[in-house]
Image (tube, rainbow, N blue to C red; front, side, top):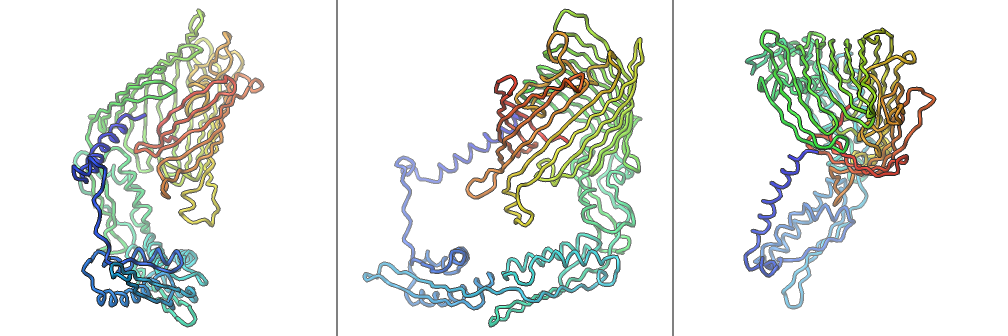
Length: 614
């Protein structure tokens, strides 16, 4: 939970209320009355189908003259004739080119009330007949651009047989030129645009000529704004190949990588199209971030209660040049301190990385004091992150009984990958993600026993709307979220492994209805302890909430979760949680508030969590 968000709402809420109160005079504030407005110069009645009536009520020029109280009958009669032509033009934008429009002025017997009656019969709408989409420039001669031309033609949105409107016509042209300019041809433009309307046959012949201009290729970057970092770091983060064909998506991705790297507060990446198209410079404008920073964090969750953290970052250590991130975190159940050193990326975007962490964790089954060291390499990219590393683990487990503590150590080699195919982050509505961790090693101490550890997870978002539904319907549609996770540690019976290599589950992000790490294997004292086998998953139905016809930042959810942990796969006893909740697209990520019922414990639990992490 982010208390800063609550303060922002309060700060901005108070001035809005004050302004609303100042809009009325003191006497009006006291009586609650609003000053009456002067009567309109005339009333307007439009007899037409609802869609046409809405169009005219929104855009008809005649409406603004209703405020002129000194408008004469003669002038109003003239404006009525102008309104007929204005209506005809507005109807043409909706595809009606042969409307029947009548205007009539009615004056009350006492002459105090005038009413303009506008009768509109739009007639039959115009439909699209032939569509002529032509290409000139390099895109027309280059055989390599054939697929790009075919895609633009296939994606043309205003097809033969569809009703013609000005909005659809404008949207179709804009989409075509944007598609052409996104890849290889950034200077593409429309040179000919003609909608030939036959009012007798109500047929529209459309003709558009797209001039691609020359094909562009990325040249050498022109970088400005650097003081403490070198150009090699920037080019490695951007990952734009000199000589590659221009692609707008590549520029956007390069800009995002620069911003998310932490080295820069802002980055703007664009293509200079004024020079040689075969070697167009990539313009990179940067503003470096602070070399060092400290972040204080305060939060609360139902898993671990109140939380406080202090994080220090040094983006460039002296002599070494690596980034150092150190963090101290304290909550009701976990206290940890750790540091991570990360090298700048190489030409293939791989980084050397090493980290160390000391942690103390409380659970019903006992307290665990652990130390962990990792060293290896990592590659962060879209859509896949990968890493391989050596890991040393030591865990000192003190049970809740009077039994002596158990110390276990291990050394392992590991590989991890995460593949994401979500439509947007951190608020996905469709797509999927897969994660896999595979490791193998041996215990340390009196005996060196081998073991293997595998952890796999997946998440899938499926909108419950047909593929033919419009963009608005897609946004309003509910969706299913499927989640699954499973882990296995294979080792001989009796092998003592660090508890940090084993599994427990339950809590805000796994099996709701149960507390954090409540589900585990059954220990000798009957309490939950880490186990070698783990499964958990869930099905969730989400639906955006609509207020006043507008899609809000809130969603409702109904879910079923289940999970189990054991030292033997035959002893896995699945425990289920069911519940409902709400979601909010907060500035710091998805806020999740759920009320869940643990079927096994027959208790209700409130769960809160912020952020999307996969």
